[in-house]
Length: 204
Image (tube, rainbow, N blue to C red):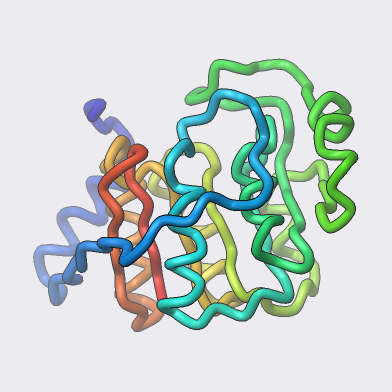
């Protein structure tokens, strides 16, 4: 893990000393089932796609609507589209400080996912998107810039608008894990953590 130099993260650490500890429950899948769809691109999400069926079944997630913040090349989006009737992917498609890509890849990603009619892509940052009225979702996936402040803001909205919220990189970025724990505390949801594939936080 990298050293964290973000003030809101340390502010949370200090204030958290006076708050009840949020237990992190280990997530161990009962079974693994590869999705029917898999995009042939490299992704740090590799491996997580095989536990989605188990996760959906265990927490009885409604599979009508799914929302994803952080699409990039579309690996996780396509995996999710195997299990949900409708998947909306929101991304700036211009990368951030933690991604290798720094170019506008909206058109190339849109073309790559054109064969999946139940996927809709929206070019937007999460701050703009959440200002609208989008209803609720069975599951929301958060994989945006890995700051505490952004993960908490996006994650808090997502936890309020979904039955289940998942967060990638809880093992790679302490600020992400911290934000997920704080969202769990604020919303009263349980925090499960899957340690493989850079970590997947699960709030239900």
